[in-house]
Length: 401
Image (cartoon, rainbow, N blue to C red; front, side, top):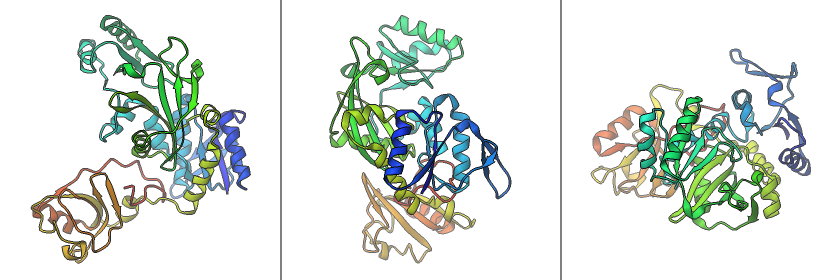
């Protein structure tokens, strides 16, 4: 494979380690500064130039885009996607993870623990927002801060009000979050690659510092995550559509609380703490994806107006509840069941002998007219998660849809 690494500095530890992993697995690479691309948009021919020359043919792209160039950097990633090149993280997923409010809004639809958060713009709403998240002390965050920059701990309500109002007068967007006292000065970073946690570490702040960022002198130690923390990290990365993510979690009294999901997590601290070759895990995952890319079934299977993809939840009153798929007659009605979600259990490509139970959520492809008729026989339409914008031929598998 020939792999493009989008990075502003080839000498950064993370970039160098990825390059070493690419070579050790028998592939080639090119490190490319995102700002040196030119994007050419025309019908049926998306094109990229680099330093005013047509780019090489790449099999995959690894985005390592800094926050200061997110807009243009993600535009480059999006263009690679339109050209049919697998990107480790999509432009859409990077943009969502970079916006702290947008990120937690996406996560909030799912059973994922997180600190209670408020976002207001009017001065008269600030005090109520502080009360809504549990009162002082509170954490105040700039929406696009990194490495602990723009994160403030306000010990009392008056200080919190003053800080928020000051930031708002300078046109800054800020979040107000509850302060997780039991996790003061420490957090957990789980490194997720391809739907599995490949390494995890606990970070502890230095002295009285409440922020546990390595760049602020925090100490790190490799740890083995328990099942709940591991599943939370994986779920958070999947909700955001990230193949590679650093999921930061606080250790709350009721379990893990996701604080942030990083789409370009650094490798240095966690590799040294855990001695895990994360670069190798990333390249292994890319190998699998390039050989067997995920397909966006909604994009591929909805090209005809009469057919589409939809989800339905079975009620107890449904005429097909308690029957097997074969007995339900769905296939004869031109409806193919791709997946059954039963609580936390996911059943992809269910067999004809699979029994349908009340509250099962069926992911189906088929005749829209036939599926609409199900609504009148005890099948309740089920809200779909909002999928990322289509990537040309590469996206979520039916099991992930």
